[in-house]
Each structure stands twice: as C-alpha cells, then as structure tokens.
Image 1 (cartoon, helix red, strand yellow):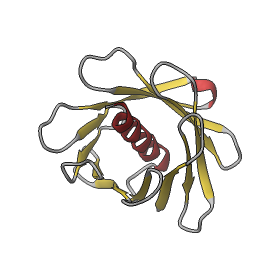
Image 2 (tube, rainbow, N blue to C red):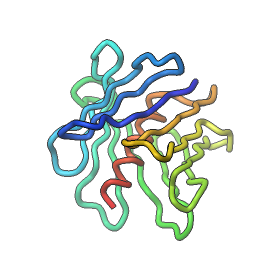
Image 3 (cartoon, rainbow, N blue to C red):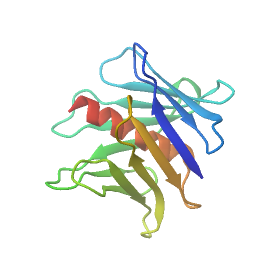
Image 4 (tube, rainbow, N blue to C red):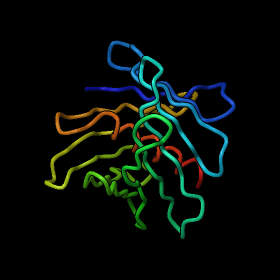
Length: 160
C-alpha cells in the first residue's frame, strides 16, 4: 500500500491530507491549539480514528503519546526519539517497531518490526512547497500506526 502524506499550504495549525495511490483522500489530519503538537486523525468519512500528542516537558528528546479512537480515549503508547550522532532513530513502544533514518538529514526512514522485517519506508519528496512524504507500507505494517509515526517525525522536525 502506498500513501502520499502532504501538508496543507494555507492552514493556521498543522493540517495534512493523506492520499492513496489513486488520489483518494484516506485520512485528514487537523492540528489543535495546545502546548506542543496535537494532531487529530480523521478517516475518509470524517470519523476521528486517532491522536498524536507531543509531551511538553521531556528531557532532551521529543516524545509523542498515541491514542486510538474518538476523543483520544484509548492510550496505546508512545513514539520517542533516541539520542544518536549520525542517523535519526525512533522507538514505537506499543508495537515493538524501530525506525531508523536512512540518511543524515532524516529525509528517508525504514520501519522494522521486532523480527527485523521491513514494515514501511518513508521518503521525503524534495523541492515541494509543503512537507510531502511517500509512505510505502508492506504487508506487515498497519497504515494508521505508520501514519502516526510520520506525523510525530514531521512534528519533531518542526520543533527542533
């Protein structure tokens, strides 16, 4: 499955549209006023399916809490960035995934599961007006969880 993650150009808060290969909107993401980033994810019918919320007071590295369902009712886990010198690395503690940047700048990422299988590949498209990523999800990946990571990673880049 391939998704195109594209930030809206003119929006007061962070807003994104996520499209499938045919150009259909699969998810819409709307930012909310809060301390740190708070991103609500809606499916194509407008139903809230998840939230990614940045923890405000963390020591050194950004951390994002992940909720599934309407009104942020079910806390699932967190996404956190590790301290590294060369390539960015993130941990997703609720599914055992590890995310490693494929380059120093953090434009490309590979998500692997606990068995070392590739779950998804993220690639930033350069020379676009807004942040745009191509997300290739393998049969081992969950699209919503991969999208939540992409949102946390993009929010972390905006915060630093």
